[in-house]
Length: 155
Image (cartoon, rainbow, N blue to C red; front, side, top):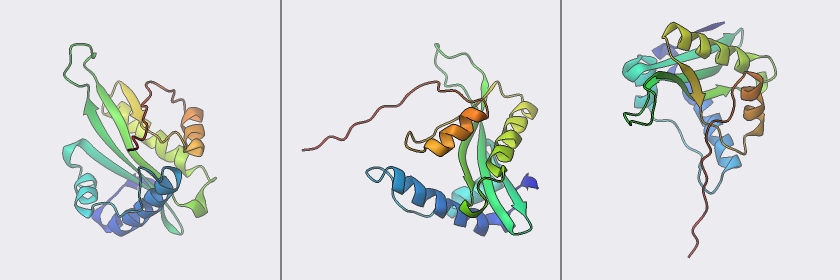
């Protein structure tokens, strides 16, 4: 079952963030590190402040994943068509329940939320090394739009 998160879900969401940040640190150790998500930020998002929404997916074992999304507006530059975007900041499914379609279901819920909120498009950012996530997103219809490039500057 997918539903909007409540403050009672804070601990479960925090645990899932720990898993996410550990994975990101494995994929990009030069730039990412193991960490805990800021509790004040998660609380703000759960409360729906700043156009955030958090959806959780739960089964008989409890909360198995979440999607944290934000309704955003195009930057105020002349070159941008002014429109709203449903931006997916974070998507996490507990490793023990991957392969059950929970990620797909959360993405679909976020897309539907975007339609409900009259967003023009759905967007996210994913680490290039996170090939499993990229495959999921591509199966769900997302396509590359821009590319960020980076290099280490060594002394």
